[in-house]
Length: 374
Image 1: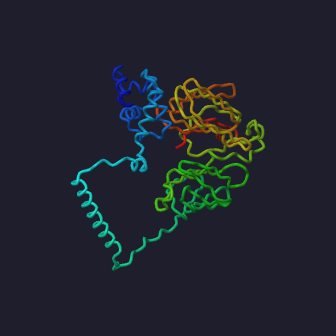
Image 2: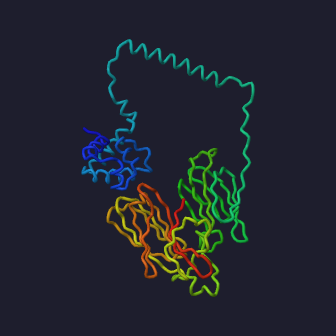
Image 3: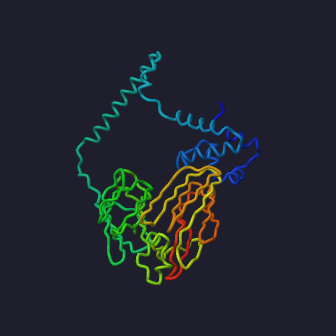
């Protein structure tokens, strides 16, 4: 039976298609197309991407997408190791005396080698083992903006917010990263992020992301990102002049002035922040996640796979955070104040995280902008 990769390659070559043409037509990076034909799946972010790209590629070539997915799953089953129990149930075939003699000699040599290793490891040491020099815990300070470092056990970071300081410490690196805060511990898995309310006002001022870590490996540490800037904060004390123009329809104040937003794409400019709608249509298969941010009484979040011609509308007062597995498949329109502005999220095969949110430029001016996050 023809293999999965050969089936894809034969179909593409029979139509005279190049990788570049296919990638442009279905918005999948050529490296993924080549990997599918070579049956090299280690470079994909996860199995959902493999299944989605197989479906799109197969339908484009006129193949049965379900058959391709079945071939892939059968291939993965074959790669699974055979259980030892099944091997033991097989009746051994008769072997020659020469083979038996070879096995006996091999076992003797293996026993001699094991004895030598044991003798070497158990012999008295002339010098005691010297323990590695203990590492002094590092101290960091975050005063606005963001900080990303590799943290090790007992490393600390002091978050400066307003006139107060909030100490945080990395206290455990087991199945999850544990960080102790003044209000109790927070735990993160790989690539997970949490928002921390430092001032107990029901608004998160600090975001912590576990960028990279190996479970139960203390010596490797964890790559952590701490973000404390106006991208997370609301203007809690609007001036009297802003009472009517500086708050949105829900009574929540709009975003504080932001730093490090040179890459922000402006959408609307207005003397006041107002509710807006994000209209999203999908051009193909895509994993898409969104959540409402910076609203006291609303924490809507959703995540699922979307296909071609799917569409959703999201309404927000202050901001929306989006995550897309294939940004070229997502078409956006921001609607508000009687205006509609189309937006581009990213290119083919790009994994993009972005916010659409209100930013306060000064006391009397606001800007709705799209900001791509790292």
